[in-house]
Image (cartoon, rainbow, N blue to C red; front, side):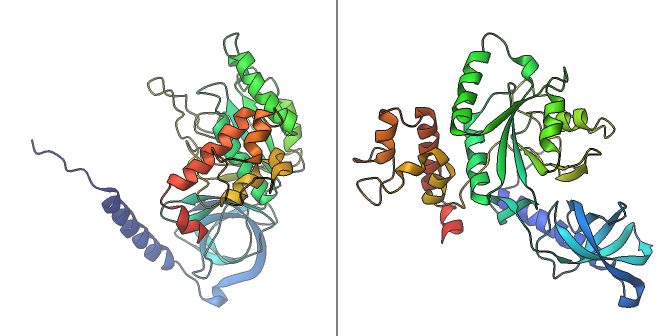
Length: 345
């Protein structure tokens, strides 16, 4: 039997680009003349699928729409101007003509797409971590840096607290206390026992929030607990790898009957910060503010540099060693990533 040749990343990318091009051509064929469209309406993007998006009209109904070629960027949560077609074409009901200016946007860098927006017009970022697969403070710190850059309020949520036990509870609580001392709000929840679910629902009311976090922390299970009528597909953590498995594949916005909106985003195993400068990362660690500009040398790398104000503060116990080490690891990842210059030119 002939051995199957494994495609390179570049070949796979070109194949996907050709597929996307065919999909765009097919989508562009579904167009209307101006007299075949209704009046311009304002709507909210509930979800985005390639060259299509689901738009919620002001009457609460959802319509799948094409995008005008002039619409360069569209994500879940965007407010758009759109028009309803007088007839349905291949399940497409209308067309999005323009996007309102965003009040806020959460983005992350992508190897091929540059800076990639995840969701728009959000007022609160819920950083979901969990006891299983593993409590990961580094991922939390990266999301906190991203949140501080956008000005969106972050809240930490520890999920799967039914799995807290004598061998892990003290260590996790000690790490959470670090964030509590800095001033971040922390809430707890368990979808299995329903403990804390009402507190989560209360935290989400009167906000447009987004759930973020690595795969397997239980974001979709939490959405099911908050909105059992949805019945979202969920997956367990892999027993072989101990890693989370992707459940949500595209971001989607949901409404609470009590008030408030929630965007459930796809889980990721790493959250890159390649697009940020070292100074921006520094500002993302808010408890470091008193030491900005206090280093002996202006080009201090905050690693082993003599006269580093941060290192001195860590040695004196003014900032936590765990946070300083996390900050240093993020800076090192910027230096080691060859794509960094692509975002910081």
